[in-house]
Length: 123
Image (cartoon, rainbow, N blue to C red):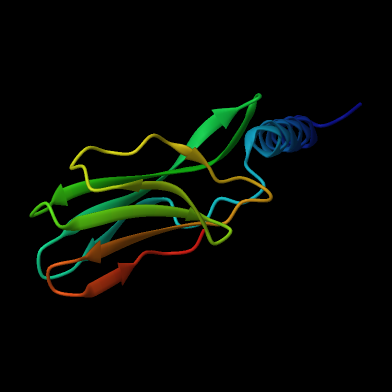
């Protein structure tokens, strides 16, 4: 017969293994750089947003660029594998773009008034 102490250890081990399995099944392949990354030039500011979104039952990163300051001469771009997937002079936030396996998204802000360019993180 198992002692009470052994039964408790076994129960804790089973619960721990179950929690680890549940977390690993819903975790993304890559989950780096989530959060807000600010891009600033003399006349332009934008928030490069990186969040986990659910795609086909699995969480992966998604990115958007959200301009917070513009003088009308600011260009806000999202690049995926060095190709522009979003390019706007608008002050509105971009749509969210999938940034899972096979994708490498980076944001940039071009200040056409000052000639400055700010680059965000590559994810």
